[in-house]
Length: 266
Image 1 (tube, helix red, strand yellow):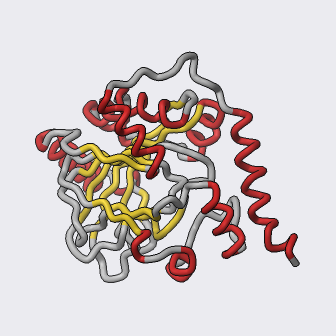
Image 2 (cartoon, rainbow, N blue to C red):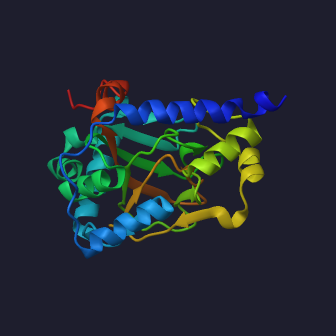
Image 3 (cartoon, rainbow, N blue to C red):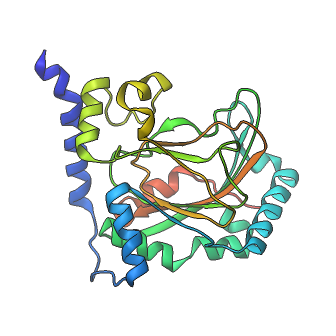
């Protein structure tokens, strides 16, 4: 009985150890200034960090216009969820020079490598437009992890985001190893099952464990997607965002191939 209960936890530990051995280390320690060290501290302690006014209003408006243009003129290139509320362009960097600048941003990559401690590469920028509907699940189709291992992403809010239009939410410390093990035992859930129902979230967390990240347009969120997270369901309006997907070099080909064919205008 006991061995059956702890088996999911053992599977997670085995998975994390196997992944750690494959990592390609940095050639030298990443050098950070005081503000960058503060961001790194927040990532290490909380799993996320927020930068206000990372992008200008003009830049965000440009991104929104470009996204709307693609959605309206290339509907077959768009991924949609079952409710047709969450609409995505995978590989949006191909469609616009300014999005490509965000895709190639060295500052974001620098913070990511300092956090993870190994070499990473961005394989995709995902453009996201989520629109209110009566049965929408927000962005990402509910609570989930991208993986159980340590990872890194950046999300840029392109319009003002508050409690009404689907702010990013995460569960406090849900990326920490002791919480991974606790959840695995309590829910009998483990790798590769990364999705959580509302009922499961209630079993493993308290209301104060849910962190909601509102922000004005231009706000950048750096986060570890091994945190349990979601874009919350919209109560009204829309939410626009651009998300960079970074991956370790040893896992890069497998994850970049997963999202092929990438977006193109042909």
